[in-house]
Image 1 (cartoon, one colour):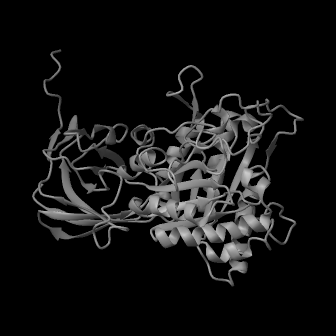
Image 2 (cartoon, helix red, strand yellow):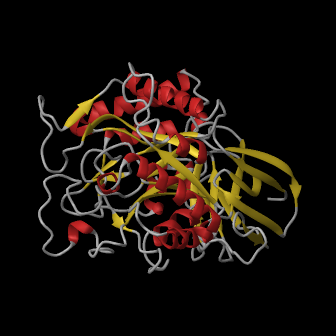
Image 3 (cartoon, helix red, strand yellow):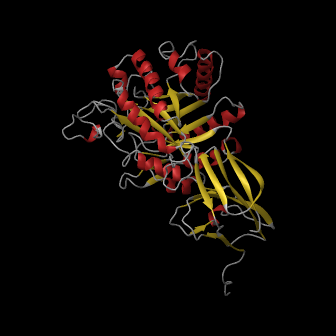
Length: 479
């Protein structure tokens, strides 16, 4: 390791994001997801609710003692998401902030999906903005699927009131947290024979004022889960063709553009999946592969990112199903291997650009998962490695990439075994490659005392790790 070079981490043509935890599943730590999938996502979506005017809050509503038995998922006094414990009377010691820190220290951004009582005061919204200031670039999705009728905010207010609240909320929150990017999620085009989107008139101003447009689309979905079983002829599930779903998303983007005077903004699919309750496990995998294949076949550069919903699910909407006997254990589904292959395709991978040669010490900058400055170290392998590991003497927090695989080094870790990067990728001849290192915030938060601390985190590397590469076992086989 005689030389080191600067390297810049940039965005993918289409970002790969993932949901982690919701009303249907608990949060899965990022170490586990990284080991399963081999790379970090651009962002991880968390789902929480904020109904501070209700006497039951901040309890999770389905866990309130003596709460009446619900007849379906959204039959509670407020949405059965995990409660947002910040806000006007809260703090950032609990959730979702612990999970947000875990996401950011693993080199990913946070998508905070937050359902909010539309009648909270400006002071509540300002407090949420103050909560979000330390977390760098953060995507905030307020009152998603806002043209539906299942969330409590839609039951308490008209669609126009929900749309007006969105505009009020994003202005106040961004005034306190300019690092936040806001995502408007409405139904979009739901009928290919219709010219307009659902509730287009009511949300026209929100379309113009938000930072990002999005829709949630499910190729198939059993919305009756867990209160019934999807059987043919039932009325609590649906299945749509992949082609029609893709066309609805594209038409939604075109209508967003129309309402915005032809000026484009980033377009996301904030939730995408096909429900194994309806399609079966193999059908789910096939539907997902066909959708992402269509993005590439159509060269859909108008689509900025897709969030797969979700990593682990109690039903069949996850890469894993939660084990019925052990809630902290997941059972991988066929879609896991399909999804892993997809997110390693060039279109969905962040790009890295090598720069000039540099010397230690080096100051690394972390702006976001699409804007970071790290180092690249040339490596040489005489043949297939039997040992490849990094030995550290410092307490740095790092994301490390080699041979297409990413690894996390926590401040406590001293040895990182890189051999999984070579399993199934045999080196048959002398090979050169690069080891790339980036430094996201060790605490998960930025230092707001810095002039640009809202947007950037810095870490100075004084010393490189020692690398141990061996192309033979420690001792030969005796026979």
